[in-house]
Image 1 (spheres, helix red, strand yellow):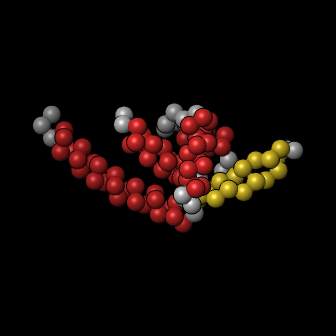
Image 2 (cartoon, helix red, strand yellow):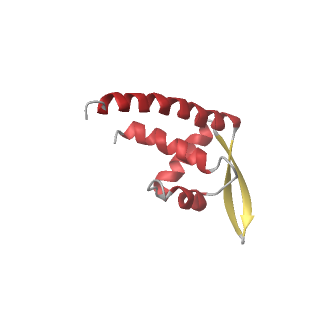
Length: 102
């Protein structure tokens, strides 16, 4: 798969994983894994990139004596998911065109 396409898909997957409630790294990985294989070394750069783009925010909470980062989607992040849904419709139209003769 094209690396840029996969990168964009993973970004939206991470946003979708935190759309309904705040979450932290390990839980995000656990929620996404049934659908997409993702590792910590892949996830954390994505989270930093999404934070820099203001698609999510981070808060630090003490949990069992350790600090844990919780991620929350922003309105811009929700908008990115909606944009992706529209883009996906276009991708599916292209896909149907490509396979039409099979």
